[in-house]
Length: 193
Image (tube, rainbow, N blue to C red; front, side, top):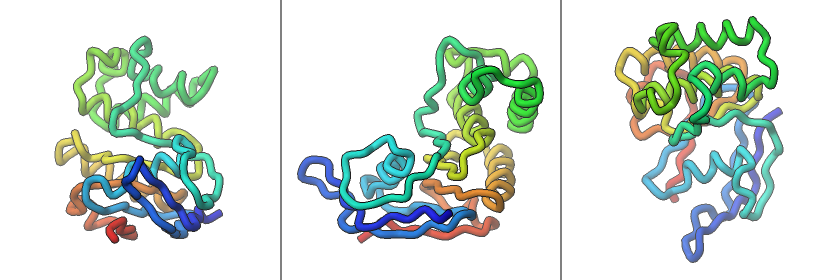
C-alpha cells in the first residue's frame, strides 16, 4: 500500500516547517529527502513513524522501522541483544543467526557482537542501529543520515543492502550527500520551497 501524505502542516512555535505538503510514496523503492538544515527532513521521518503527532493533515498509517541519527541503543544490552531482544521478545535461533550474519557483514567480529554500547565506537553503534532496522519486518524503513559515520567500504555495503531491500519495501532516508547513491535507483523528494 502506498504511503500517502495529504496537506501536512507542521510548526515549531512561529516557525512553519510544512504548509499543506502532500506526497505519495510508492509501496517499494528508495526515496531520498533533500533540503537544507531545518527544512523538516527528520521531522517528516518522525511524523511517518508516528513519533510526532502534533500536526494537521492526513497520513496513511503504516508500521515503520526507524534507524535514528542518535542510535537509541539500550546500555544494558550488548550489540547483538540490542537487535534480537528489541525486535523479538524471545528470539529464535535463526533470528539470532541472521542478526550475527548481518553484523558480521558490517565488519563486526564475533567478540564485537558481545560488546555493550559504552564499549562501541560511534560508527559501530550506528551499524547496530542500522542492522536492527533492516532486520525488522516492517513495510517501511526510515533511515536518518545512515552514512554519517561509515567509511567508504561500509558505505558501499550499506548501499548494496539498501538496493536489495528497496526492491521489497519502501525506504525513506535523509542524506547530506547524494554521491554514494548515484548507482542506486532512487527518487529525490525536495523539501525546499
